[in-house]
Image (cartoon, rainbow, N blue to C red; front, side, top):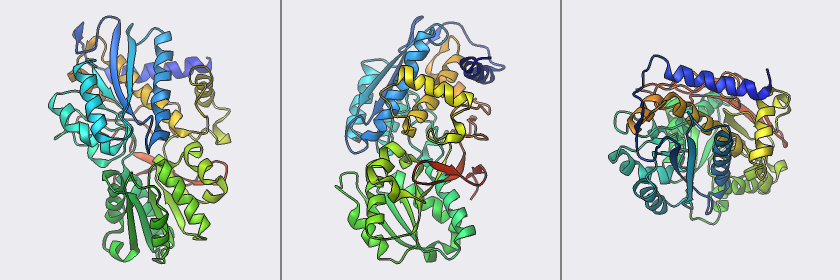
Length: 406
């Protein structure tokens, strides 16, 4: 079996698992669907302070081009309409309304950013439009009771923070912890997750916190203030631009904490190269996707398939940018849901299928990590594995960990 066949077989099997036991009414269509087309909406920060994440939208568009060349999904081509919101919540609201009301998209797929998704969540839920597989790990996306039209994809920031806290308690029990965080639900989820695991020790162990706004020019002053606290552990919950600044400043002032970095800023291309790779040696993160620069994957069929896709469909993308593996993988998840929906492409059935994913593997997920959902579980990925930056790539260590416990 060829590499291409292997991946296609895996995804076809995933679709069958999703559809298992369900009968679809033929030809039931929601807005944006015809016998030949499925309109999908998206907003991305192709410009602005989080523009590094624009690579995700480009990867998704490239993946859908491939799917369309292969005949589309159940004979329908994906019309992926992706707009630049500049990481601005008001702009996201404006664009999403246009996509829903004027472009008549079936659903919003993977809109990026905690602030932007927070701003559009009410509108989409009020209008019963799927806000599917959002590109943010805020814990609040897993709330099917109150927001049945919103679903996350990546592990929640609280899960990630809990994993760091467990590691700290076990290996650095006398740690003095400083936290640098973005002043919104994204950053605050890390504080919540840390405190949940540290428990009664939290007030003693967390000796300093500093927040930043996305409009701030730098986080240099915050890093200096955190160093002054005497902390020997630093947890940084920042988007790529500010994460790179923090890494550089920590190194330049001679501070040597054990440094934990949010997974969403773990890109070698977008963060470590601008900061200076040598300045990030020893930083720890928690991952769930295969790191494309890690040699251990490069002879595997899954990696070779991804690389062939990059070269043919996303040649401007950088292999060292993990956002490309993210976009590829989340797009595969959506295609599996669309396939499982058959000819019942209503918004209601899309959410039903998205909430019926039995453990599904994807080529670029780390071994042992799967995608699964239910009607009461809107957190598709719940496992991660710790990894450390060696100046060139991320080195995995330890076991795959579930962060769902407290």
